[in-house]
Length: 295
Image 1 (cartoon, rainbow, N blue to C red):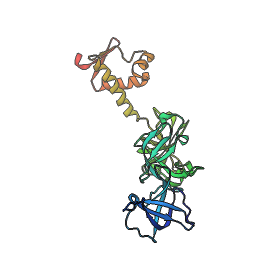
Image 2 (cartoon, rainbow, N blue to C red):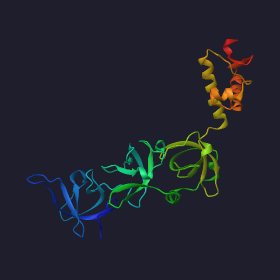
Image 3 (spheres, rainbow, N blue to C red):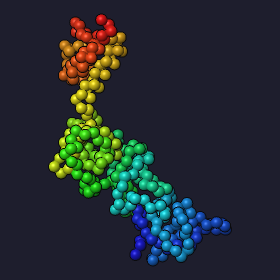
């Protein structure tokens, strides 16, 4: 027996036209199940031919007025069926609205989102969800659990070590973030391996720092040592140029002064400064650093 429940696909009989009083044209059809429960299939939700007395497969959802409605557009995301859904709107009083491929966006309730709002997804991010209904039958998006993500994850080979990856954040914990990569590998980003905590649903770029025995990955969002040195050298160079090629800092400067001005440890500062000197871009004299064109 096909019960009428939002979030499911059912096969229903086309019972009669839906027509406003004195209207010449029908605005859809009423569909019924064996219990004579009926639901409206609006003409804008019809694909192909529909005949009275025939049967159609439809997806059930609530329309913008909260009434149960039917569409012949069958989304991949249903109750018990998961897929990725792009975030299209954020309402701070409600949560995140996602597009599952039908005419009405679906709400992922704020109750299921991180407590810290700046970790909520943004439009353009994506969430791996199925659907659920509350006690009043209202349809909501349901975030995938760790068990669900584990069920779809692929096992990474040890050759993935040190590879660059892209992945979507699907779970946030105090100690770190979980992602699923474009290849379908499950990864963990420890809080020490990032500059800031990524959002739920955010796509991040990282690198593999360990392939674990179970085929999951440990990921770092921090640059490699050479990349970090390049970034630090660029920061120092830009500051030097902003002062017309002379700055009162050198490898003899105090660590606290370097940290306050550049946000770098003294070791990182010296490595980056050494790189600029090796490239013959700068020289040091009497505790100052100068661009080479000032010689």
